[in-house]
Image 1 (cartoon, rainbow, N blue to C red):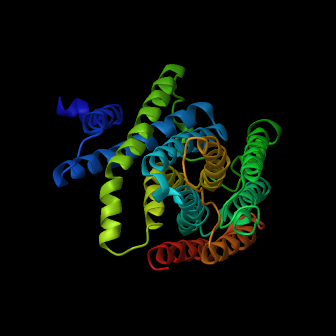
Image 2 (image 1 turned 60 degrees about the horizontal axis):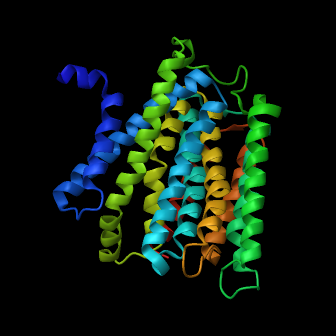
Length: 362
């Protein structure tokens, strides 16, 4: 029995995580139960990565990266909306903090770590500048329209959009994201594939292609695992909030922790792709996740604002805008040559470290 569980751990763990979620939902959790929930959360993350790779191997790139990014983001949006509705005015800035954290984690943390891992193995990380540059430009535009402009608009007091402005930002986000997906998958998919001769195909491409049934089962288990990740993250969020408050940290740190938890599957998948010398896949995951996080969250929040009482604070503060501007500039300088060394990876990781440090010590 034990051997069977070990052999099929990626099948068993999502179901266990779902069971733990169902049993624990709506209950007051003690320290022991919180520990068990945390263990189930880690297991769900690892199994999500495993099933995402099976699906990606079956459908090929760039569809594989897109599926994981969209699946994680849709469930992330559900978590944000649920927390905002249940927390009331206390969660007025939760969407902003979580989305901004997702952008910084993906564009600096995941991207920097992927470049560092790839460059450490081959001295040079090579990728497609055209597709990656277009993705970065889309992320920068979405972030500016949705997170920077509310700080400077005058229709409403504070870093808040008026109703019409929020609708415009939501529609613009959906349009930009939809056009990017069309370009990535239909018009110019070659711009998002590994550079010929620049990256190794990796051992995974020589493995036997999963059958259609195996891919469908993995897709279903991927969704179960991701629901488990977000649901279990919500269960431990009160403990996280209490710990952050007890440590005297700002409330915005909650959004950072939530984003870190939700983006764990993509982080692990991106690093594993970089280790296989498939840097472009890592960058697709990083920038695609940032884009999906903004392009899907802002429209969902705009729709949910009908039921959410109180202000919806989307505008960033001065420190956050400086970090975002520096991220865009450094990202552009990293992407333009189509290749990167350890230096570029370290620069992005230092930016990510600065974001985390300033989030806990503003």
